[in-house]
Amino acid sequence: MQEFIVTSEPTDLTVVKEFLAYNNFRNHRNNDYINDDLGLIFEDLHDENVLSVDNILFFIDTVFYLTENFYIT
Image (cartoon, rainbow, N blue to C red; front, side, top):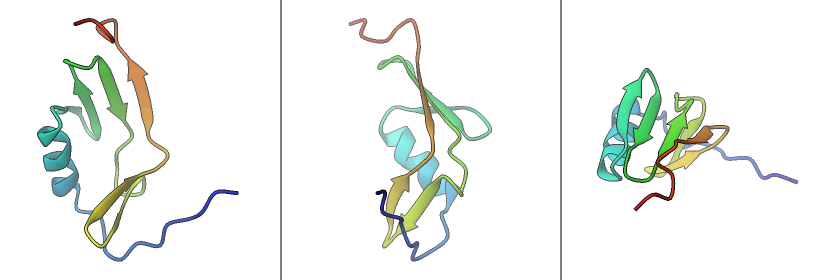
């Protein structure tokens, strides 16, 4: 059984973008991000899939893809 998350405030997508930028993800298009160093694409990060509880972000129902650079050092 999956617990559900009750939000305490609306998700600010600017905060999501700042959090991801801090973790080396760049905005690729719309609500999709890519980390070239890790070889990861992180998609579908709109305000219904990123929830906020007491200023903590919860990523739900998002999509990850691996690029050809995944695991290359």
